[in-house]
Length: 206
Image 1 (cartoon, one colour):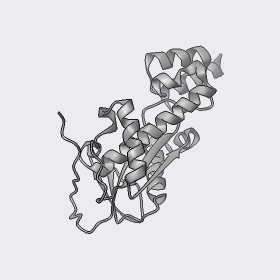
Image 2: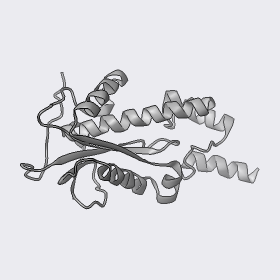
Image 3: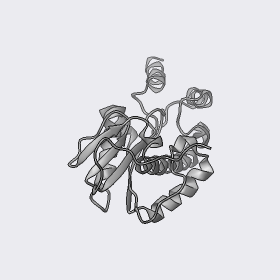
């Protein structure tokens, strides 16, 4: 059985108020990119926290409820498709992360960020590669970001059922590309992403 995530940092974290930060939705062709920030409560440990991609959808949803209930503070933020197209996905992701950190009801002294880049913040930050499976706070943020984005894509499916967003969550699967070619580009597609941009170019040259 895999080991759960454990708190890890290059800093001496004694006395720190740590928030973990992670994103969901950099790769999809549609929908916002989400980020979450979580400060766990040492008095209320949560069992089973790990990278959201290594959990079943049912277990993610169960843990998301527990995190929202038992964490000291949490916040979820996003950047829209328009912002992604204007800024590029990296900068939009950094902005969503910063919004999540700034949305916390408790001010952290250190933000541990999943990956190799940190958003510009007023507090100290540290990037941890594969942090979503090493640091419990980042694992919790990973779960909240993923479940929030999945819920948003299910709502998008109700508005645009022809694209089957409930099945592929906006990722460039064979099904999504087939529906995209059949129905054209929707208002929630990211126009700066190559498959979408190519379809728009074909349409404009037709």
